[in-house]
Length: 322
Length: 300
Image (cartoon, rainbow over all chains, first blue to last red; front, side):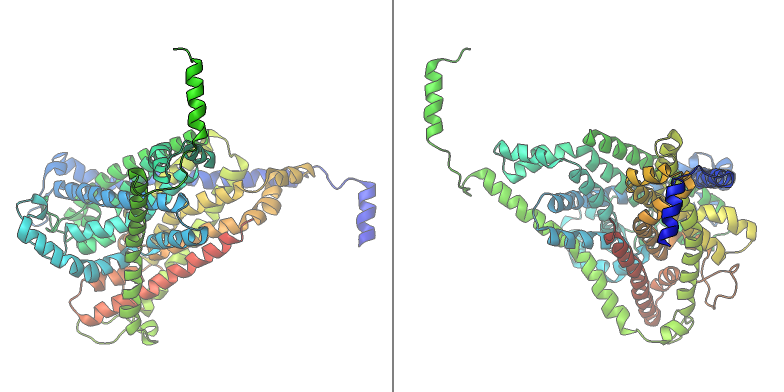
């Protein structure tokens, strides 16, 4: 064996030009890889086209009034999604405020040397596990844990502060407040993960320079690290917002699916995604068409938010590394 | 202003009396620093509470009903006692399997294109951008897309449509993580392969993919884990069924849809089953998550 190898080495080099068959298969393989990459683009295009096509009948029937009408009455053939658009934006913004506050704080906590590396890893795993729990499980947990847990506080707030619109209605169970809490928990891992990346991209010498100026740890964090990571943090918030807008099953289970516009945290509401999930399986032809219009509206909103978030993130990464 | 000799001597005197190096809490900036540290500690601990609460409920509520019947029996109707969700476990596994069969080859090949064949082309940048946008896309829209594409054409909800919908959700994760892993392969290894006359296909098969395999597997396992927990797309593609899976072109049960359906029922038996199904579902998701971590930790 060794002899054979030696002799072949001595006669000719181990390198040789590829054969004709190898050239051909190489070209085929590259073509296939290109096709698989292009499949990604095709997928997005197909999603836009198919949902647009499905929504077309409802668009021609209801027009733009569909977006400003707050009535959803399949019996009368009257459809509008203003209440759902309101519920989607309201729940997502409230959840993002909570998740952003916690997520960015946790990103600071995990990247700015507060913990020994092993303990930081434990916390990081806990936050990542929050993202691994399926949406329906959060829904179930929301029904049987969150709603009973916040009931006493909600009742107390309503009794004493009902003049504030936020607490204006009595707490009946499923509604905006439990939905926002669960939504915030589900968005938190996204915000925390992307913010952590933003902090980790900052060279360590930047912080050393701040310490050298005599700052305390928190002065360095708040005056140097956070402004440097600001674009990445902003991207994490936008992408977290995108997640919140499209979150479906947990909300369909705990938001109450009521077609109304209210500022109150305790009244039931609805979102575009949970309207789709809760009415679609049993909808008739007419209602299904209207739901497709709602799906297009959701597509439109989440597409814009996700594109914006992705652009901000790549911009932030480029800016920080150069 | 010019510096006078007086200034210099004054500075020299100042330097001789060294500043205090001790931290004192009477200084407001130190106190603020301490309070903020305590504050983020509290926030981090609060953020950990939901996970432990969910896990506690899964074990106490879901674990209470755990028995072999759950895996061998069909879901009970209305007032019936007992029952299980064997068909839903099979349905989930079959649909995730179909999804993986589609998403892994396409995703890894796409990753090869982005990471090894044309890493710097404009087209690759475009594909990468679309993949990132789709990662954050609501999965319910993918479900509606497959409903319009497959379910209406086939005239029935099916495991096949469910699997395709899950594949679409996994695709961007698998493609982006594969690309990352492939990019980590040192350039000198690829150069060496090219140097002895490998075509780029041979370089990819014999050098790049074997080296990047742990990273690719990490992405694949993560994709499978999130697909297993997915529910919104299945609602529009596979729907649900109370019977055993007999063909791929009929409505098919899944754990997540079973949990959704049973959670709204007024019967304690169904609620208990929903908790047990949640426990099983989370265990499935965790297994793939842990696998992805194991592969990830073997990265070079």
